Figure (cartoon, rainbow, N blue to C red):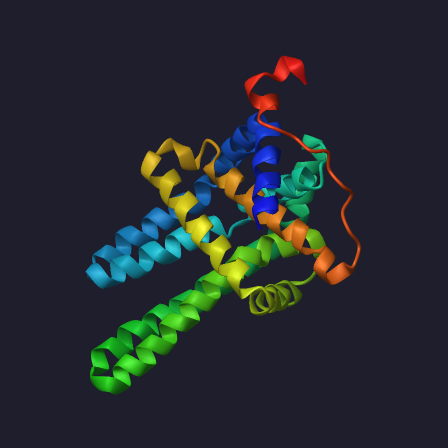
Length: 246
């Protein structure tokens, strides 16, 4: 776990400029989804505070799991594999995954909507029955969030169908539950920091999160393929503090 985080930090350090560029590109391409998200939240707020909260969660999810986001993961996969990006090829790859990325995003948003509406409904029932059913739906919501950690890394790595990607992501959660919780917490933290900083989400936070998830997924693959990754040379802080001596 610590070794993978170290690899993530060095990969991010090696591609700081690229992370910012691809994140800015994501921000520009995501404008239509952000506009739709804003409209959804604005309309839902007129129906009540609780509906406004549900709409906000769905809006954020719809923006995060959209075709522009797949570009972040395409770039992150290349960097995780210690390769350099050809920007023309990156855009072409993003277009190739766009339809499936949107379908996956729509499936997650729909499932989240059903779960949140059920939670709202069961809270209205009250008593131990409502508490039990509502608690069950909260576990379903957590499960969806954990699956969401893997869907785009799996999609760009395996180039499979929507169903195959969702299924493989679910199996990864089941087989790596501790890691999955850790990655989800890291994702929530990074998104929260990016959102609170304002420009952070558009100037590197999103791409950095995609890189984190992609590095951990890449390092997880040998567990299933049996093919070990090439050994990487040891690197120290001297490379950062005194790069002229490296």
